[in-house]
Amino acid sequence: MGRRTMGAPRAQRVMTNLTIESVDLEGQGVAHAEGKVIFVAGALTGERVDVEVMREQPRYAKAKAVYWHRESSDRVGPRCPHFGVCGGCSMQHASNEAQIAIKQRALEDALWHIGQIKPLAILSPLRGPSFGYRSRARLSVRWVDKKDQLLIGFRERGTWHVALMDSCEVLLPQVSALLPHFNQLISSLSVVRDIPQLEVAVGDNTQVYVMRHLSPLTDEDLDKCRAFEQQWHVQIWLQPKGPATAAPISPNQPTLTYSLPEFNLSMPFSPVDFTQVNFPINRVLVKRAIDLLDVQSHHRVADFFCGLGNFSLALARRAREVVGIEGSQALTDQAMANARVHGLGERMSFSRLDLFRVDRTWLDALGSFDRVLIDPPREGAQALSEALAEQSLDGQGPARIVMVSCNPATLARDAAILVHKGHYQLSQAGAVNMFPQTAHVESIVVFDRLPPESSMPPQASPIENAL
Image 1 (cartoon, rainbow, N blue to C red):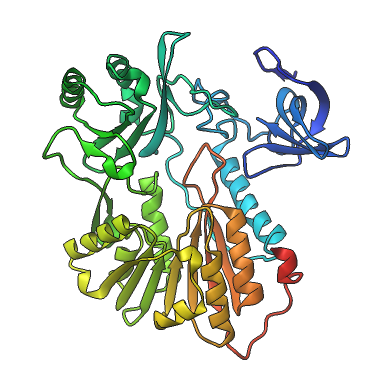
Image 2 (image 1 turned 120 degrees about the horizontal axis):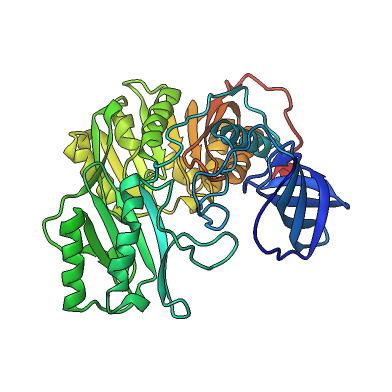
């Protein structure tokens, strides 16, 4: 028997008996009907569904599944009561194995359809805890006069409204448990209408909650916050303007740290610094990246987009020299401080540079590298890939590159540059399930520079078509 969802329909129209062919990068089922692509929220590959069309364009439509004629064996019941409303998760209806398979397929599809490349080998996916893993989050805060109520949570799916959350299954359990108590605290403050954001950062040793505020807190407000800190053994920081203004309300607080036990590293960080949200996966990701690079004691290694040294310090445990480059001076300063604490300062250097504006001349001036690790933001590393590709055509540049990516589309673009415009082959690629229950695809890929005399058979159409 079929199954029907609850709730008042808001559809423009209904389409029936659609067969879901795949799942896209946003976690939506993909079907074709009436000459259009239909993106279906809540549907999985192989399912046959009726949908309500929420938005329609000449070539595609956005819809949500409302009735299942045939369900996938990968479908599971969502664990969170807010799933479907809260936009923090989009895949709790799929089994863990199905989520990983979807992300691996998304990576391979992007590499082929955008980059016209197939990896020579597929890496086993990296996986970890499916729930209760998230140590970083930026929650929206809003006082709603009509409801006489404070909302703290992620945005509702597809809207700017804030979802009312009294718990969260993907946040660390100790963070989820504090959400109702933070609601009570902020509701009691005189500036309740001027607090738009609560940022969470949890380390191995402490929890920090950064309150963004648009007007000053009173002495009474501060007393309430300090009492909250003592009661729940957390730190509260205030951020009146940009991230650089964030500061603790109480002195002599312990510094946030996370560990990389495989490399005997403890990494201090600020609650407003960029760090990975999933520390268990980060540990295995760093190890895999270092292993794939095959770093030897005589190697000189570059870590581009190095952040606060997440990969750099681990690399320095094995390499002769590591050069880290990042666009943020605050992060490179912290990276160097971390290196010195661990006795690695003499074999490491860090500098700040806009890596979106580099070229071959700049890269040559850095000297030769045996290995390169690249961990760019969502925009990717196009300029850097162009420079590395140019080097490789002259038989220069690193023998191996490992790239960690949070965006399959820009990864595929950059891979196409290295393979089609340079002299690299895509040797290995695999998914990293950094964000379980979401459609976010993290991945790791390996490029090997080909010997000057070798030539690989054509893999694809010209690079202009790939890009």
